[in-house]
Length: 157
Image (cartoon, rainbow, N blue to C red):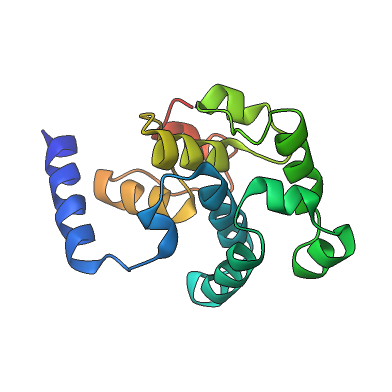
């Protein structure tokens, strides 16, 4: 009962407080991937203009894969290699499920879950530190942020 109440309350809160962000209006796994990588490194307010600039310059994984590496590195170090792999080896098609996304170099559990959930509607938990903190407080669970098993409390992935 507590879990279903929580789900309803968090959805109501989200509908009242949601921010209008471009990656929330797409199911394109490439765009979601770019947003998740940016948001791992910075806050939304700082990352949004960077995301817009990056997506304007490289709207598809093929565009990013064909880009001059020096130019990409100036915008974002390390991303070009992964884009070339997806473009050439996977013909520009992102894996469409959590387990296959995890096989991509540079994509961890959180990013794989975000892409699988938001782009492909796979029912996997997208739990970062902020989500965990909210869930832990609501369900009265000790929030030991140093625990290696911390994320396993709320998700199976």
